[in-house]
Each structure stands twice: as C-alpha cells, then as structure tokens.
Length: 303
Image (cartoon, rainbow, N blue to C red; front, side, top):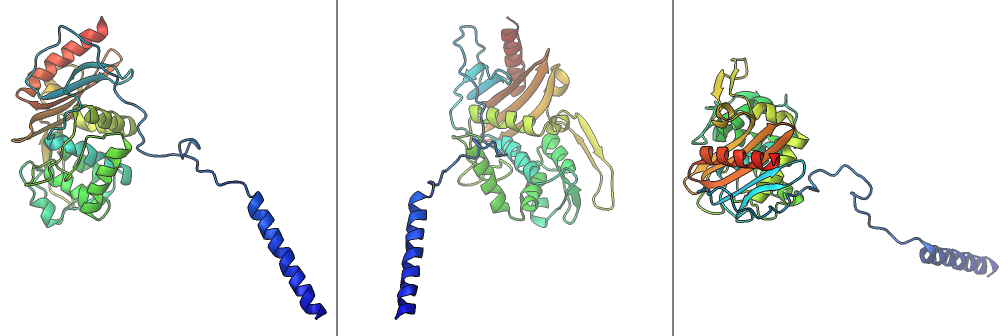
C-alpha cells in the first residue's frame, strides 16, 4: 500500500508540474519572415506612383500604356494602366524570371519533340538537342521563340504545369493583382488566355532587371551567333526590337504580337543616369508610339 501511495503521489506531482509549465509557457508568436529580415523572394516593395495630370500628353493608338522612371517610381505617362488586356509574348518575361530563379545560366535543357513543334515564332530547335539557359534566353529575347520558352517550362521543374503554377504564384508575390498566365509563351489558346496590365508589367520588368541584370545584356543584343556544338546545331539570331538601332539609349526589352493582343512592347531605356521602363498594349504602331513616349518622358524629366 505504501508503494502504491508513493507512486500516486509522484504521478500527481508530475501532473502539477506539467500544468504549471503549460500555464506559464510564453505564447507562440507568429512573426513575418520580413520582420526577421529573411531572404524572401518575390515580395514587391516597389510600385509606380500615380502620374501627374498633364495637358500636353501624346495621343496614341495603344489601348493601355505606362512609362515610369524606375528609381523614383514616377509615372511619366499613363493610359488605362489597370485595364486587363492580352499581352502576347510579354508573358515570356515571367517565363524568364521563373527559369532564372530556379536554374543557372550554364544549366542545360533537353529539347523535347513537343517543344520543338511549337509555332509560330521559334529558334527552330530540334528534338534531342541540348542548350543551356543563356542560349535559350537569346532565342526568347531576340526572336521571341516559343520553342525556347516551352523548353524552359518543361525543363526547369520537370513539369510544365508546375512551371505555370510558379508563374502565377510569382505574380501574386509581386503584387501583380490583375495578371494571369495560361502558358509560358503568350500564344493565344481557345480559352483562358493570358492577360495583364501595363501597371503589372512595369512591376515585373523592374523586378527582373534588378534581380537578374544580366538579362539586359542579352535583351540589348542586336545579333548573336551560337556555333554548332556536339549538343546542338548553329543558331544565327537577329533582334526584332527595332528601337535598339533607331533610338539612342534603348537597351531592350521585349516585343509581342498576336491578332487578339495586337502589338505589345516593353521597352527599357537609359540616358543621363535615368532609367525608364515603358509598356504599350494593343498598339497599332508600337515603334513610333514608343519613340514619342520616350521623348515625352525624358523631356518631362529634364524640365
């Protein structure tokens, strides 16, 4: 009986200790990773500022446009900046970002039969070839190559569906609240086509060039020749961005076109220590309108 009483007493004492510990345990604190200064990718803390009302703004055919000085965030020209519109191959800017966040420039990708068959704009990749990420980026920026974009989508995570999911998750992280990506190319499908806004695309472009500045060197290349290797054929590519050779200061960035989206453009220009990102969606003449708006924007900054 004494042994039993002692055992009961010990158990009761342990129970009291547990109860005391639970009552006096400090509450669990839910701390944001940002407050701990953790390295959290893709959380945007930069957004363009509203444009001042101007009476001398150019008239353009584009359905939407936004030109922003990226250091101050000052919007220099704006038109329907939150209107959701098809964006054609400007989708590939996000494709490039996801690939760069998950792969290195010298990582190789295998060209599948499905990717090689994608139309219409392409590098004319051949099934079974192997190219590294940098080589594929030249195809995307200079030729807007759909086959190269599909190779990245298939090979970055091993799943095209997972890659597209990452694209849309990244858009949410960046604060691109009016954007949806249906595929990695921007090619129009029967349903659920990609869309975005001029506002969102400025956010995306600035984030990409800040995090991966090497893409600017690629996008401003007027011509690149990739010699034949054991892994792939030769590729001789010329940029489709006319402004590279006709507007001093333009250093890329991306063009797009589909019948539904019309002519689309993201342009990046640097002059006198200033940097401007401009977006045109649904334009009837993106080259001349981009030139006019770049002139307008730089003149506005100079006043």
